[in-house]
Length: 193
Image (cartoon, rainbow, N blue to C red; front, top):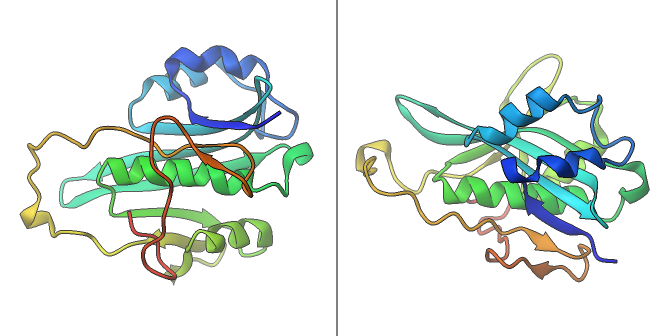
């Protein structure tokens, strides 16, 4: 059976009753789940295998008074039974498309220097280590040059239609989901949002 990858919203809370072992760090807390899924700036892309969540990536879209929006990738998790199939990459692609649709200029994540699997995942999507580093982690920014300066942004314009590029199927023969277009990295070594 094909694995389905899609964004989850508040109407999908019942899906969290069936989560494969090892996907999340801790048991799901219903009140925190409702708050997360109900917040329009929180995003979670999930990989579903026969109705069971077997992988996910979560992110927060945030704004600041003097900057365009950015996407902070909080966490990626894949069940041990489903690792090595490209699901981490597919759920991250879905979140990056969310960032693009919301005019984010950068997507970034922090990861431990010793987490080789995570660093390889981010690099496979065009991520690179930011020149800003901390002693305990590398800032692994999936960076892009802003398409426009803040002075030229129409802050009153309606945001683009939300059409995430979630993928259904395995990474090798993935097909574009019903709601969006395929992911593309337009600049080698950097992700264009």
